[in-house]
Amino acid sequence: MGTEGAVVGGRYRLDQPIGRGRAGIVWLAYDLLLHRTIAAKRMYIQPGLDPARTEQAINTALQEGRAATRVLHNCVITVYDVVRDGPDAWLTMEYVPSRNMTDFLTEHGALTPEQAAYLGIQLASALSAAHRVGVLHRNLEPGNVLLADDGGVKVTDIGITGGGPNPAFRAPEVTRGAPPDPTADAFSLGATLYHAVEGVPPYGEDGTGPLRQPQRAGQLSGALMKLLREDPLSRPTLSDSITSFQAITQGRQTAFIPPTAPALPTVPAVWPVQPPPPQPVVTKQPLIHLTPQRVRTLILTVGAVLCAAAIGIGITQLLFL
Image (cartoon, rainbow, N blue to C red):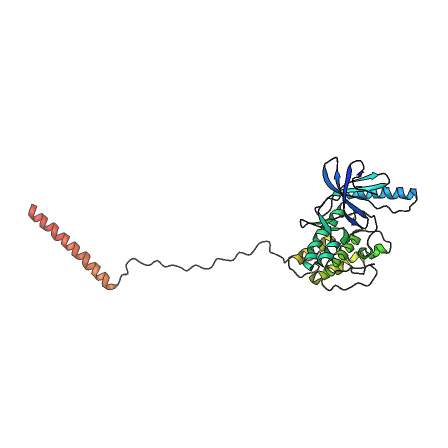
């Protein structure tokens, strides 16, 4: 068990408890080698096992911790290291000032459908990043969704099975003994968002009751009900759910958009070019408007000028010849 001031693995000093999950205490700690503040927690090992099974459980926890270090996403708490300290395995990870969603909902009440849809985008993106590197969450629930003080969303405990999944958020096929897979994480996502907007789990606290029809989910209802389907093969993919959540946050009323339908109204690749409006033809007006009267006047004027010129020329010749 950790105590304040203890150094785990010869490197990580435990400073003070900052939270408690179903798997144990989370500590604010300090990395004495890299000189940075971190979070640390002792990984859950079932008590009362014989030495051989205890050793096997410790090795399993160490393997899960190493796998979790591969999951890198801005909505995932980054796991830095996993170390063994005597009979214990310890997980060290980034420290983010935050509160878990369970505490937030208790203090502030349920989310609106739009808020839950926004949250769903972050959670589904984080799960998709984990699945791409071959890691399942297996335990997604409000208790391991962190709402950061800076407004961000962080998922923790990806791939860490210590303490076991909360039955209210566990896929029914997993409850019946089937191995978890990405569709089971999709169910847990739906159950977590359902709880966020409705205030209660969809199948009751033990996960075995009848499905309660949503009362407050509004346009989010369709997406949630599909994620909560009993048949895992009929659940939407995380990618489809992200498309649905994005449509809801953009004010559209579509609850689920299948992969064969566009997420948004189709926009033509090239807008048709409209011909310019016809311009009025401007007729150039003549400088002088000629009427018959003006023509006669012009002829007489020209004739008079010519006669005067002829007379002038004649007089000049008489005087000088």
